[in-house]
Length: 73
Image (cartoon, rainbow, N blue to C red; front, side, top):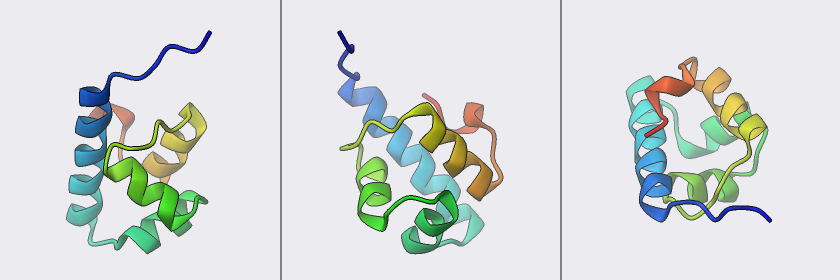
């Protein structure tokens, strides 16, 4: 059984990613490409609609050159 994500935490996580991406000056398309995921999926993560796996979070952090502690709620 997979636990369902906390919607509030998911939305906060997405806001944190958006903030860091904007600080780095990347578009969603650029961040998605560098993270090796689709732009649609990346945008969904930022909106708090997607629940990314650890490996996706890791790819986003590497792409944005940030630590996971900077974006995890």
